[in-house]
Length: 339
Image 1: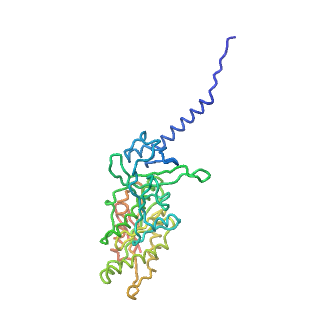
Image 2: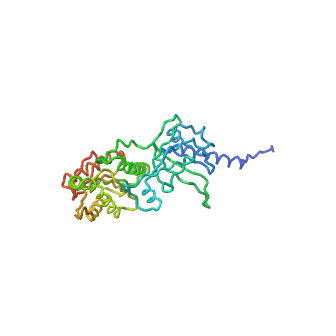
Image 3: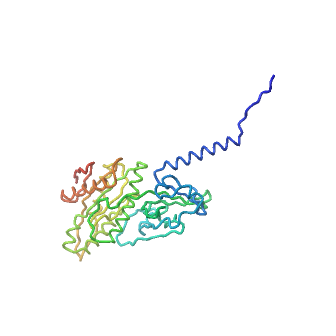
């Protein structure tokens, strides 16, 4: 009988093959992400730089792996102090018009103030070709099972063009513009999340019916005293995950995650009822306040600008109906008014 040779797989080679396959799958998965992803180890050297990061920043992965981040990579990042406190404490977030914006400049380009941990903020990234790229960026510290820091992760995407989004009237200048900038960050993040996770997302566009008349009869100072009073009252009726912010001289937006338009309308009515309880006095006179509200629910294929346009038209329908109304928006900005 001739010799028989049995072929046995080398266990070491088999394990190496599995690791190579897993590595290839991981790299393919990271490159399939629409968000840019950058991960650094605890020494600040890059260990992950996916294809989207190449597209957004202009820096090639081969040139970045194993090296520190580019110098001055993050030009600036900011978030309102009130908002940062709200996020850090897990409380409701909303923006007061008298809060100054805080700025942070990180030494390694991957650190923001503690309130921004895990939450997207606006930043300017330094592109490989030298120009600034406005992005929404979320940064997280990576820790081992004992809580020790092992690295930092940032995922980001280009911010939408702010000028294309419809706004309320604003002649108040930089102070109100800053609040609108903060509100835009929340809008863009909610919109992006809805696109990728299908988490329900809608907005309530609110106008204080007495705002314009109050400015004419009592002056702008009276209106600016009135708006924080309404804001404080509305904050008591917010869901924990909702955001309330100024969107105009007499207007607010609420970013909501109600599951349907019907629930969003019901919530809008509750908030409108809360607003009527606002205790506002000017020179001893108690002034009753009501809201005109427009509700719009995001659906796949709807852009952020279209969603806001629908909400604004719905709010205007409530104004046209006499105020103290909540109206729902439909595709094509068709609206119906309801008490």
